[in-house]
Length: 418
Image (cartoon, rainbow, N blue to C red):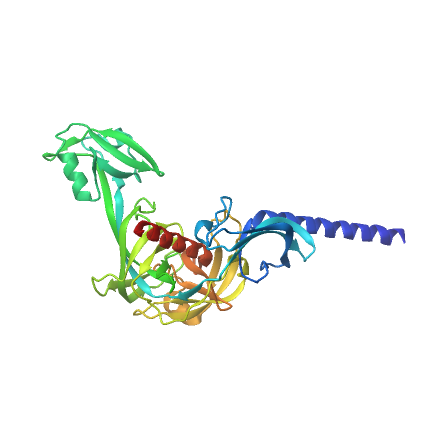
């Protein structure tokens, strides 16, 4: 009998340690804030059952349709939150994990796209992409400028083109030029003394003022005409730094072909603009993608509900993507991993399982970024990156993160217009 008691006690201890480990793991990896749709309970999709229990007397009603909460996970100034409640996440419906905030919203209805779109960006200032020595000296480097810096003005005149900054430096006749620039969003100044080279004065730097490319639209909001695409920022090809947006537009493109992805060599979509006319305007180039407004709905699909991150689960899903022409097709994928941690570098890992897509493209190719991910009838994410050594796999972003950014852009545009 004594041995049985000791064994039972040891087994109980092991179980308790396992439960404590689970509580600690979920407490660390789960966010402190969740969206919920009105009338729906908060349940987190996970290997083990996680639900929520309301805290007593911890419900706050927003004074208007917009609720500000500085410690929130999302940019709540634009979420149209109607109620915020404190609740406790419960493991197995009985073991407390952590206190979180539930933010009640009307679940958005968004049109999933998958169409390719052309992108044209003009930078806010000009970006230094390369430094170069002139007779053994680099004037730009000597005054402290670095690759990736954004030059906004020369001698008090704002610059937005490669040509203009070259003209201003050349006209200095070798006298120091006052350079205003940004580095990591911090404004700085420097005195650049040009060097004479081939009959003109130069600063020893190459700069970029624009970019163009092809990506995939993720969603269109029929209520606001807002769109989201790519799921990642457009970065300079040399510096890998996100281009600062001054203005931008989108246009129609046709996919004319693709280079197939292979291990160690990701492929890409090939396409061309079908006209010079604009189909929309870009208002943000952010870490979550490209956002703005479209002049009309680009897709034939019906609007579907936005899926919140805690509703996503490992398993089957589909994407809409275009690898020929301009009409998307639906392809099967598997969501392999979901990371709800607030500091996660990537939200999801996905794998292409569709035999047709694998046969044609080898998996994910560059240009498919932004392809919407649908699971259980909801828009839950977008493709962002391909694995170089395993092109059938890639990363994806949560759709609610992209929707938040789209809301921010739409609201900012409204405020500017008013």
